[in-house]
Image 1 (cartoon, rainbow over the protein chains, first blue to last red):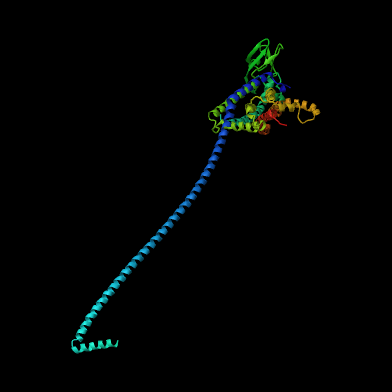
Image 2 (image 1 turned 30 degrees about the vertical axis):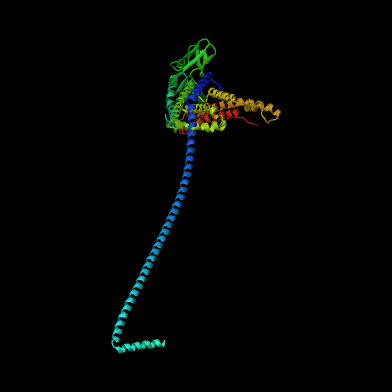
Length: 164
Length: 353
């Protein structure tokens, strides 16, 4: 029975001690502990959220970069292709021009040569004519030294004339 | 003090208890011839060992802190007696005044100490608010709690966003456990913060006093009905003063119940309001006292059978029981806090039928 009879003294001290304990602990221990636990959790939560957002942004940025890279590559390829085409066109144009110029030169040379040839042939012909005239003159002179031969000839010519 | 050293201490206390028990058994064996000798010299018969008396003495409160007695040597710490009587007013004196040099109880200034209670020789009422063994232990635990938790509180205040360090990291999980598993689960996200200081104080008060009680020579504070009664009364006021309209309608006019049933329901509910803190009081008291009784009974076995060899069986078993008691110390603190928070949760809940 003594065991389950509460003592007045102990009740008094328990109320006093527990009351003081509650007051002091609540003010100087639990308040800062609960507060800072809450703040810490909040800050960790925020940090995690921030890191997740940053990660997402980074991923987006990376995707954007890749896209940029792809388009840059395509542009570069297009530029190279264009440049190549232009170069090819220029080369073929140059080839063509060179060909035409060469052809013209050849033609010119041919024409000059032709003219030279004609001139040469003409001069040879003239030479040959004057030579043959000289020759004929010499032959005639030699043949017509005597009178008989001259007369014979004149007579032949006359004969011819009459025939016509 | 770091967290590690606390565990070491607790572990150490078990070893001490083991040693203590074996020492006791040894001295019992060694004292046999000595006792016979003493019986020859002393005219009075050597008192036979009474386990029940010894146990009740150990779990009860006393006006001095008695650690052990070897032969005629009594290792006791006298404690201050604070007594108020109408005729003599407030008196403060050492409890050693109640004992003479032969360790016999003697009256002092018209007061006498009988069975751990101070009575006035002239029969008037004595208001005894002495610093008894339990009060001393209570004050010790209060100093311990204040120094540990105010210290931790300071650390939190100085760097609130850092990871816990040292003793802080020992108690932080427990504080979070009380907050998340006990307060948040039972009271709810909306109101729990208001009750956190109370619940944490209750939890650590009970836990620390339970643990202190397990140290050999420690006081049985949480196994004392006065202490648990005060805790229960505080819980009663905290619960009912925070009671919302829904709570009171559930007590006096349970909704959704036929009118005639209320004649039965309402008295039951009203009894329930008082029964809840009453059960808190009895549960903590009975659990802690029972634990002490078991441990003391096991030790007593050696003295009852007057056989040191029994120690081979008793020491491991009491070591085992002591470990169980360590768990019980935590569980009882947890259960008390848990139940108080469920009562608070029920009181502040707002239903919408």
